[in-house]
Length: 107
Image (cartoon, rainbow, N blue to C red; front, side, top):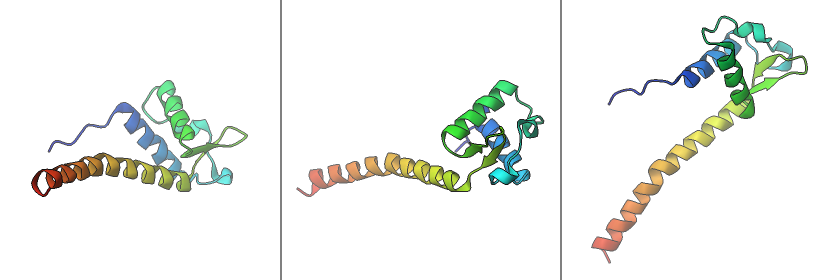
């Protein structure tokens, strides 16, 4: 199966998170300013939009003085929520199919 190509937004998010990991920005005391993202090869609007989306999900936090850091706990919660969503998308049709087979051939 062909691998799906990442979108610009997915790639931008990965790069923003990579910067936070590289700078070890994991708390308010180690948070980084916007200048830390200047070497990402995307327009400023894309980076700002990406950071805003990550903040909306709680993955990136902003300090009072406009610095940013990665929140590992919220990242793990988001991953868990996405995994549960995929499980429902895959599991529910499978369960319905099995019920259909049971009703058709057993009852």
